[in-house]
Length: 381
Length: 201
Image (cartoon, rainbow over all chains, first blue to last red):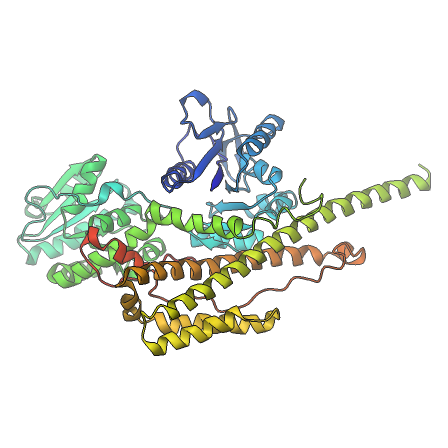
């Protein structure tokens, strides 16, 4: 299938939408599709051949943030030329409510259009002001995708209509068949934590309090911590003999991150808030480590409501200690979580996500190719 | 300004509005046709796969008869929309009755031909769900414009009857995506029945 992907934000600055478009393009190419991406970018020569640039993007404030976007007659002309030369079966725009290439492509393309909505926070008044202009463009979109329930809710509330939920993909390629560090997890059991641990919302103090309690009854139990932060903070929070059983790795490479996740019996995510999506949970499940996470909405969603990972009351170190002890003492329960966790991780893998997105393409483009052509002169402007 | 000047201005504005709105309506009707055609195709495909599974001889005769009759009724449903909604919902219910039991899916998945059919059924049931969502979305957008006062007074929608929602039960069986777990069984070394159906709702 000839697919045109439109990214509204400049390729030069890393961001969630850019990463999504990049990974999706690679996954679609891997599935044998003919893919072309159009995006603002400073240096076209540095781009892979499947990406077309519309030139420099301008920083503009929109929806409460400053983003680098492209608009104006020159961008519109380049988008039109790309559409004409690409002769796409389906055009997939991202964030079509931003005043950039996606909106321009939506205006200019008369054919099967798919749109993905990423944002979950839209300023209601921004949208209300822009709505009459957006509406005409949004009406042309045949299939709408939301990457999360929150994004879907935003869409339904502010723009009306509905969308199908297809999550962000996560690349699981580096997380299969990883070897643990020598000597880990060991006979006494091991818990793991990964993240910038000086940040309060990561909830490390909750885990440390629970670990102190568990360590009293379990002489062999160890804790593996990876991520940037001040070791003294951990030392000050624990008695000296308990701190001796904590291993701090500091900042780790991607390869060591996967090994670290494989080196523990239970991966603990004690976050106390502010998490929108638990990628590290998926990574732990992908290497085959059971997950114990706080009962946040985002974690509950990723863990399938607590089926593919255990949940504990957010911020409650007593509950964390109880649940961790249950898992440490029950190899069968851990093995069951590993099986379910792997399946969950796989359902977020780009290969699965791309397959679901292709199904959307097929639904709007392949099965009704003539419907757009049948119309009179107004339908084919 | 003479009075006729304002009359001309009003007329030009009205003409502009009528042209723009006609274009929008025309585009929406195109989208409506496209998404409804897609839904129609997916429903037919689902019925066809169901019939093929029923005829494959891989399932027990009772389940086969159940699926064959539901599949046949869906395929033979008349052009009457209300009738079709009932029949397609019944097919959904029959598929769930057959495949909500993971053992049934497993029986099918043990044969290579059955595994292929199972994958096809999984794709077909998911696509029915997608296509129906997209079609009803187009209906919502079209009805919103057709409700505008000027559109009604000037009869901009012409003689096209107002579109209707297609309401059926399309929740796929819980254990169809089980095929995914089997296909990767060689990698992970486990063949347990795991529901990995992505949440498309």
